[in-house]
Length: 83
Ligand SMILES: [Zn+2]
Image (cartoon, rainbow, N blue to C red):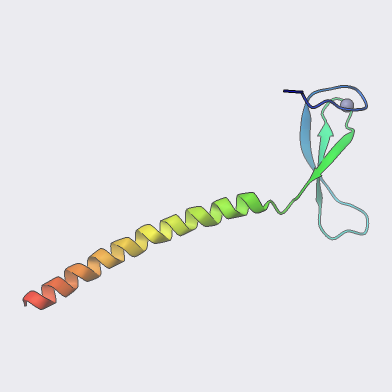
């Protein structure tokens, strides 16, 4: 598999750096070469993948809580039916 290469210095190590742009309200995440600082790309600051993963984890937690509540309600109904 080809290794990503900086077009300016031919370095192979990159980092994400958050920067403001003149006239823009939101910051931008630049992917830049660690050696020379050349920008080679941009990333979405509002990373939807991370947001979806957090929401999926929250949904799983809620499902577990609903399951516990459901089990409790079933025990209450069973108790009341046998009383
Ligand atoms: Zn470079």
